[in-house]
Amino acid sequence: MDSLQVRTGQISLQILDDNGESRGVFKFNPQDIESAKRVFALQAELPIKQTEFEDRIKGVADDKERLLILSDIVDYFNDAIDTCFGIESSAILFGGAKTLSMYEDFFKGILPYYEKSSKQRTAKYRKSGK
Image (cartoon, rainbow, N blue to C red; front, side, top):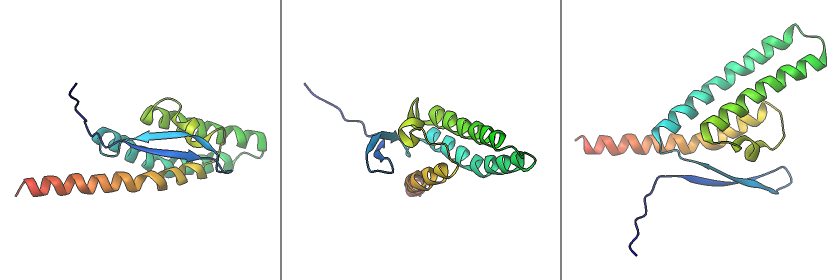
């Protein structure tokens, strides 16, 4: 039987926890334009949500209330990541951890793939437009 391989540009990364044990494989496609739009929009929300968190906890003296606010923001990003990359993506990436810094690590890890794809896409169309 004949076959056809379609290269979509999907990347698969093994995700390891702090102990070096595998959490699973995270898959994403930096060449997909819609995926890139969602990722860059989500990344732009991170500092906004961090500021929101800081503003919300300023007037809160109770540690339990502060933890609830942090939990809300982490849940928001986990839901956004699951919407962007597929259900359970946040569980593969972060396990049960709930910190804001893990999202910074996440974006630092995947943004270079999206930036490289964006440059390649732009270069391809510049060449064909001459």
